[in-house]
Image (cartoon, rainbow, N blue to C red):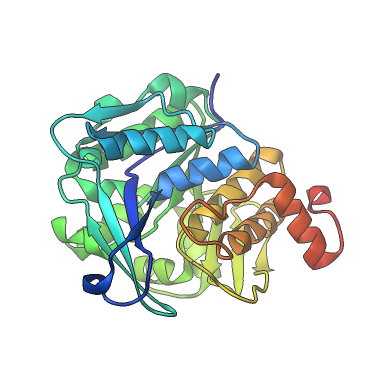
Length: 325
């Protein structure tokens, strides 16, 4: 069965401190997992669509854990390879004090960084409706960067929509430097159909926080849809040959864990587009997904089902989210 959304990139095992304070005083951890692309794939699956995630994991227990868990969420993992020459990546989340979370990555030279263009499956990309890319993958290694551009070429060849979330990771830019990384992100954005940066990311990439100006720059390069997230306030949307505007975010009384909210938002936008919603209503739907994600701990635990999103919108606004088109 072909997937609605195909994506690829690194997913790591997360060890989350079970108590607050510096890690030297923490004796136990909760094992979770997370990766921007697999988060989106899981989000898509939970919202009722087919998703496929490609990657490499180590030939180790953590690698098997990732495949088992992600497949268990309804994602096609048939094209995830085990790689003997490197371990599965790992990151550790430290809770210093309420509101102060710190993340340490152990991902240099991980199995996923050895992913290359030969690992792509053109048939799966060709039969998909969306190829979703993030800016994390091309920073992992030169072979990963080549794979990103090759995948985009495959998608373009088969008229598959290319979605790009920069998802900037400055700690990964040391390999090539910030200026080259900025140009790399802009090159990928220019080849995409839908670009979904945060406002701070867009400002770093394009030198302005004027959302309409950023959108026009992207439209001039051939992008057709732009969505710019501005935290918990609103999201800006614009189409090259259509309307533009802002969609307010949903108010949340308590943010439990903001990590993964952007991936949930991206899944919501893509699900809305797959359903045939207008871009405005797709963003509105995605805002509800993001709000639900920040209300739960972990990267994927809070990703909602379609029924949960509709119920949330109905509760907040007094109407069924399902009627939005």
